[in-house]
Length: 468
Image (cartoon, rainbow, N blue to C red; front, side, top):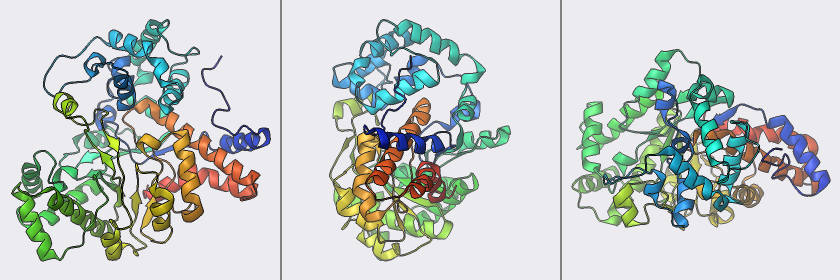
């Protein structure tokens, strides 16, 4: 019997469930547009086999290991690499057995839905993972990963991915993207310009990163105008390699629109390494406005996702480095914070700025009203901690009434876990079809409108918003 219920996430009312199922059947097999993610471009460039089941499902996935850590499982026992060079578990089977013994912890979570989907649809399991079948799971997955059908390019094609965007440092040489192009493979993998390392004065090695930016571009990045020109040069390089978007992961949504002379003084200050936290935040805010202006010049879509209080535990940061599951959502202000940028460029219809949030309280109060009036703004989907059935439903409830559907950008999966991509899109399509069915059932849409909106939410809005 299947691990997953065929009508999962559909409404309980039989008639509404039937309509949701009918809507879903029209979109379930649409190609996947994945415009904002974190898969490794080296996977597609080299097309090498994934190492083992633990390295595929457990060790790199912060959704998985943060839950296990919350119950006292040590990150080192899950094979998570240590930044301080300390020992970690390297036996994939031992890691897998530990994961399987704790699989019950994921009951009711989106991670369980994604994992069950991958186990069933990709590998053909019909019994849920447990300690009793851990070795059978491991052996079957491990054997499959050794075959050509489970290489990254074959899975890309099997998953019916039309295009996938990676997220790449502004300092990246994009050699893997060049190798993909040179290989003749027809899969479309594009980079995304992520300049955090050279716009955030609190990023480790900021001054050295800025100097390297200058070396890469031939610009004098010790001068304000040279620094801005260096960004333009790198953005042009990324565009030539297929990029259609930039990505900005700031702690706050603060923006500034300083006079250029004042911006130059602030830039000189942050380069010294002596800027205080407010000056650092002001500089990040100024660079968001500068990046928006550059997007007006070159057409790159701008993504802003503030609100993560990153690396909350100092000891984990010291031992394991960044992005190890200890990033926590925080309150975020948008109305006041975005006003300088929006006063500068918010009425530009040719500019596209996609806003994400980890602060759900801002959806109805701030984000939907902003996107519902400023031509430059669109709302990204429920993100990170909220890309769950409940989070997606809350997103639709809180934003549709003010921003409608057409000021949103459909769904993106935002994941490092390659095999979760079809699972995440399937979840989003089911939730959206359930929402549309309920709008029809309550007289707010007619059936024809719902069947027209379903493919927009599943694929077409994302394709248009990201200019893909």
